[in-house]
Length: 263
Image 1 (cartoon, one colour):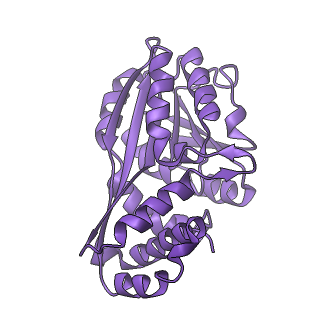
Image 2: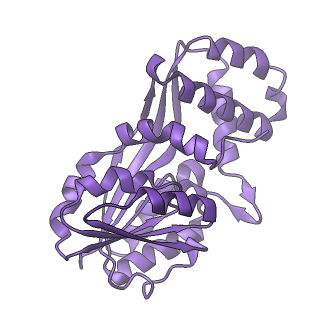
């Protein structure tokens, strides 16, 4: 069993919740520093382009977006959805963790959504170094924060949360993912290089009007917890039935804006 992953259907299902959750105040803090024309924005791990659809209208003037992802199918969808009269797009397939300061020359902004928690500490350090060396601000949204609030509560909630968080920190192909530790690691990496970092809470607030997303998220959350902690498998079916019968959820995320002194 696995979490919903990066299927276009899952990304489409979560897009509204993502848009409502992102900390728009960080964009307002960022905007005065973006004065070149056109803006060149690199979207790392772009998926189907939801970050671009959310951010383009919040930035001023003509924009050129460079979309990075490993999945050519997602890149194709993102590129097709990002066209507009003042927006141009190019796509780059490949390993975004290998980007260097040289690659970021001429870039106005590096951004990403739901990415940092999928990286390792070394990858975050390299990404921070590339941004700071190139003098490019970075806006990372919707990093998993490791806290879920369910209403009504149950005693098992904490066990599933702990197992899910451990799953987010698992080793994948020799890479130890940061999971809920990602924002702390990114803050340390950027600040250690002299950048100014601001963070803001960006929780999903899932209620009856997001029933389809709530159900899909719950199934993925429980499946990942069981994969990490098999002892929960016997509890999972009844727990999930109760939760799918009606629950409100607040799923914590954190947004981060890093600006070097050169920005």
